[in-house]
Image (tube, rainbow, N blue to C red):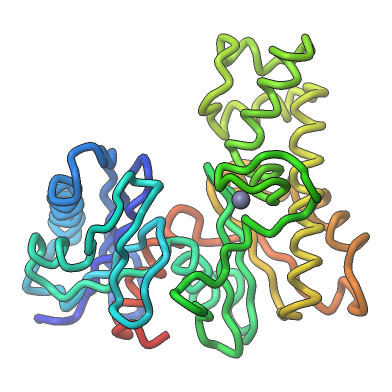
Length: 324
Ligand SMILES: [Zn+2]
């Protein structure tokens, strides 16, 4: 039956994850591949199409069963045009992504910011289901955020709302990838953790189990390695993780005094690996810095959709033709 299913794609800096979703938001199949953004927009578009076709095949479907495609991208979306022109994470500047992808897929395409999609999915079908106002934090290579207000995705001027990773939590603090100083992303993200290990071990001569797993090359430490060292009670790893997630709790408390959400969801690759072992740190940072509200007023929850959150959110966005 045509027009019944939706393809949702997470176009990340390193990997593409394509899924097929039923009208009732059931994930029927998935397919993953490397992004290779150096192939350019058309090359990457073709890789996304191949991954989608693999997932469709696995689900026993074809393109004629698909009405639209939602693609989650690491960039802001212009609310007037529905297009993204810049994606520094993928190295693309001044290119109409949606237009180019539409030419490759020959289907209606909806683009939305990746973490907005993740938050939307948790709100509709995951940890924050049933709440009206929700904030999402996704800790991966960077730190992304998403905001739902009274059941609607809040995208703001030029689609740039919810960039919660770039809230400054320390005046003239650590340098962030965005060029500013003291952003929360510079304290709680994989990039931040890697930099911390480099500083503590290479510059300050500290000792850590991390060295054994990384050959003293601290770029791109895997979440699984961080977890291994954390579980082995490596002091430095515990300190880095504890501080990072305490600060994330503090940042969440700041947002609580602005948005007062009923629920805050934490997800992304690092949280996915650590699961509830980071919650005590988040909770401590949150409780100690919360204003006017009681910590019981706001539910702090872990993502339940994991890797599927972003592509499921992209599919929801497409199903509802961007009217979320
Ligand atoms: Zn920043």
